[in-house]
Amino acid sequence: MLVLILGLIVFLGVHSIRLVANDWRNRLVARMGMPYKGLYALLSLIGIVLIVVGFGHARQHPTPIYLPPVWLMHLNALFMLVALVLFVAPYVPGNHFRSKLGHPQALSAGAWSFGHLLATGMLHDLVLFVPFLCWSIALFTISRSRDRRAGTVYRAGSIKGDIVTVAIGVAAWALFAFWLHSRLIGVSPLV
Image (cartoon, rainbow, N blue to C red; front, side, top):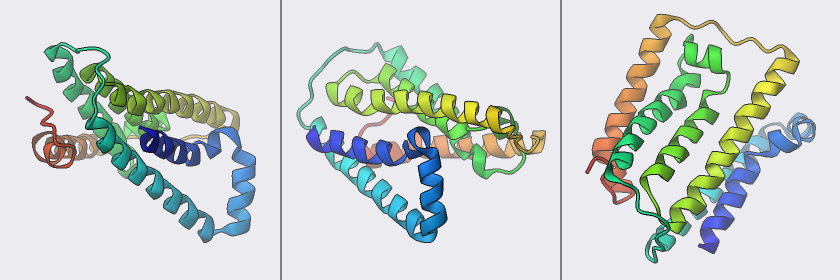
């Protein structure tokens, strides 16, 4: 469990610099340039590896906290569909998800973590998903507040952009639900 917690500290810590020290981060980026991005990517990757390894180890010694009903496990599939649509939204030009929400990936992490909290009940699940849920709420709230103060306006959305965003999100969801999740995580989410 310690490796999982360390991974969360590294990954969420790196991804929280903008939340707690945005001016310092901006000065550092201006001074370092590309090496900052490389260091950021390296630390993020280290965090992900630690999370994956730690979660894998923690799953070998499960500690049940609650037993979710089957219908909540199925409801998680809907949360994952929303999460994957929101996850791809910043990369698809001209969609309403980006223009209206500003930071759809923060909401994506929230939908992912909340859905999984509904569907799972082991201690290691709580250790992984609760910090991600709290972080996503803080990230979205602070980022939207910063946008309002700065007068940030996002590119207008279109129906075409929405359709492309949803189509890619649904395709990613199907890929994960029917194939990748069981291969990578060892659990079939639609059982």
